[in-house]
Length: 178
Image 1 (tube, rainbow, N blue to C red):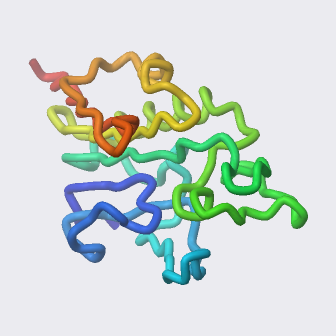
Image 2 (cartoon, one colour):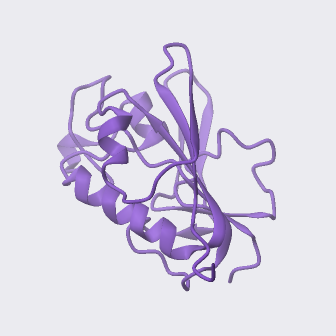
């Protein structure tokens, strides 16, 4: 199953990839969907593996790099309806907001526990000496709160975006043979 050196745990629509079919990356997401966005653009979440980032189906130490770009929204900004990818939304509470469709949401779940488990799983499947690239947007939750959810220390990070509220952070898993 694992022929790729890189795992993207929450690939979504693969929006930041130059090649959305890059064989070096195993694309994973809990969602699989195809829709037309409110601006008329086609949007698709079509992972190689459909799995939850809090319980991944890979052996320990499987990947040289892991990309962790989890949902960062607690609720839909467009329609103020709460929903999430861990608790099925009711029919009257469908995932309809533009940002919700593109990025998913943490919603009603205990987001701290969900992200804590996500970090633990990412480091579990990462090879010693491997790199975890973490992306977070501070729309609802500050990155300083998120970094408290892992005992690992980042090497470096960089804010980006119009308001500098998207953070790219790099971790390296310690080599346990040193």
